Image (cartoon, rainbow, N blue to C red; front, side):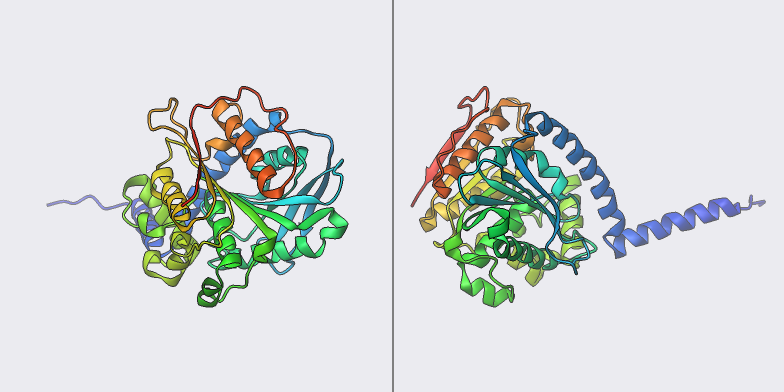
Length: 356
């Protein structure tokens, strides 16, 4: 029976397709780059929502400060300091999200400007993202950034004894991990990582929409499961990340102690991480006797608030969370800074201060 020959282009296409499938199986790079592109587009859109709410004056800017010259990711940070501060300003160090494989300090710049307008120095820090940098490189770089800011506190107008760590999404995981390093000496010995700060200088943590229990992610399916598994493969350098020391160390839920600083933990009712990650961490801290304030929303709240809702400042729920963030900062830093300029506040959700 006569058979039509398979053309060379068709053979080439089949070969490329097979190579692409093999590449996805052997390396996280192809999928990581796809996720990064999607996240980058979303980050630009969210920054656009914040920008109209961010002040353009009254702030001293320090752009592109190089805290780690050897960092493959550039090792730079931006710092926004209130120009009319009566003295050294409390420092909020914000760690951007992006699933450990995307994002930059530019994504949170408008939010940092808002914090600076209320009397806080606010730093946005870049770190080497995956797969270029694997765990624990980002943690080490962020520790260097904190040391840099403390060493130059005098010339930059910062109070090195009033520091708050903050982050969103993967940045919240990193912020929480740095807080554990500062407050749990046993954790530092197990991981071999240096403490990021002296416990007495760490006044609080702000954790929005973060990841704190990697075991709870291991069983995820569908697109969400694929995304997390790709990101954590890229970040840990191991496809079987859930059974590695990196996976265990990143799960800060298992390492927090009663010395963990006061925390503000927030998450949207339309974000699956609120129930599987933020809620359990808040409950664990409360059981330990650590002061923890939450901003969660009823399951039936409409519209459902997505991951990173707190940056959608066109929404009243995000503005309410911002007002509560400022109130938390004033409390832990002992600063009298009223929440000026926050409009349409309403108690549509649930705020608690939990103590054992």
